[in-house]
Structures are given as C-alpha cells and as structure tokens.
Length: 105
Image (cartoon, rainbow, N blue to C red; front, side):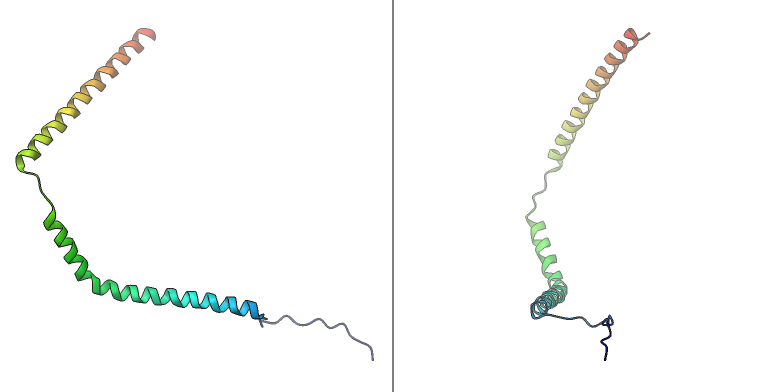
C-alpha cells in the first residue's frame, strides 16, 4: 500500500502544555482575585458612606473662619493690587503704542 500525504485538519482544539496550563491558572487566579476585591470594595463603599460623612463633618468643625473685618481688609488689598497692575500694564501699552507710531508713521 502506498502512503498518502495527509495533512491534519485544523481544529478548534487548543493544545495546552503543562507550563502553559500553570500560566493560565495563574492568570485565572489573578482575575478571580481582582473580581473579589472589586466585590469587597463595592460592599465596603456602601458601609463606609456614613463613616466618611461623619469624618467630613468632624473636619468641618475644625475649620477656622476669618472674621468679616479680615475678609474686608484682604478684599481691599486684592482690589488695590489689581488696580495698580492694571495701570502699569496700561501705561506700558500706551508707551509701546506711542513708540510704534513714531517709528512707523
């Protein structure tokens, strides 16, 4: 009998070597661990909402607020500094505009 050259048919069967099997198991374990952590986190988020709100409230109690006089003084300082900077920039702009008009009639 003559031997026929038969090529094996490609199939959807995946050949897994022992090393590849171990790697696949490790990947599956990592995915499972991540899913477990996400599930735990979702449960802990629901429980800790009241706890976080309590922490925020306790921190707000520690905040020191400035008096009305301090706020007014600081506001006046800011307005003064902005006005001075505006005048300086306006003056420099007018100076450059004058120089530009003199050089390029």
